[in-house]
Image (cartoon, rainbow, N blue to C red; front, side, top):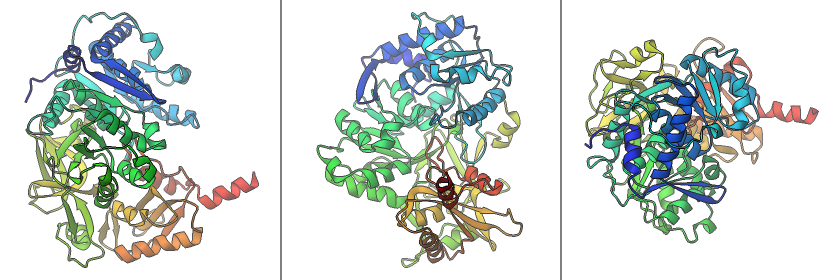
Length: 564
């Protein structure tokens, strides 16, 4: 393992090389050497100190532009200020709701300042009355200063940054990681016993920087290794997924990570004409993580892009979470994804992963996420915290130098989550041959007549039905009306199948594959099923809206539009 370094130390080391970032937006590529990024960040550090911020103060960063976000993050760290990344609004359609949610985060974190864009500054200025600790709202454009070395530097045990989780299962929580946590995770991931990154590696990413995979995995890891990184915007990928693949081909990138939905989007929306001139033979590490990994999706991606040089052995499933900085396990490099077909009844009822019979139509397909990082540990435990043997399903717990310092200003939650050095993830999984297979989240399990069902399995079962918008299905159990769990599927229709036929099709598919009766299929307007910053469907948020009775159905939306 390399000598551990703080974020400012890693940036200073990289600034002595000729490498840097390439920022891509609107078809324009702007290259900034690490030396240029270092100088700009020193100017931001100076400006933050001149604005009255002191060591240990928390500054929230709400900035969309990647270059401005990074120089603000680095500058805050250089100044000894604690940077906290908050997601910017996805659209300007519901800014009052966005500011309401963000104000709660700022109050809980006792934020002393916000750095944002000119367009959003007025909205944050209006928060002073409800965020009494908020001292300054600074537009990022105000912070450009001539560089000057700060008076003191952070130590390895100071907070590197606070990252607010995406809120797929609960309200956002501020995950505080130290420079020691950060450097330990990056060294374990990129070192000789991890992915073995070399001087030949080039990274390409479109992932948002306010999420751990985008920030740590695809932006800070290249920095710590002094390797180039090409950063596209998330919007460019969503509008034209082929742009991601073209950037990999054009820059001869060797590594790029993305959630499962990104690979699925490429399979569905990249046309044959987009393959012309594409060469993906350079792509040696095609990482997949951040959300449940669907084996058929990876297989379909490998098949579709094999003609342009992509190799299935480049696919690298992984598991991680912000509370562990980023990664916790990786599959071995150069191996095709390891997939197991598991008997559903044994998995959900007995909580044992038993290989399914060859003709078992209800079998669950699970993908190995690989082995723990070097210097880190993983174990599976039952509800009482007792360690379970291989192929027994329980909660995934992690230990090692990557485990977070804690949830920012929430000691009670930290104590419940990190116990005797072990991080309790809330995720379910099992070990087979030492490799981790993830089954889902403990809180999401649906129980009907004593049987347990994972919502991801139900969602995937109907995701490819004609008339369903891919990736816009949520399954959950609810006891809103009293009694046992009622099974509800919330589906965004594509508009190609009549509503009644679509609902019947969803029910039949679930019954055929899982022997389960769906109590209600709710067809909702496009955009209702939200995603977190990491691409997960917002299952808990959708369920909460359903239970409050304010989930607008597609039929009601059509009727309202007609009346208008």
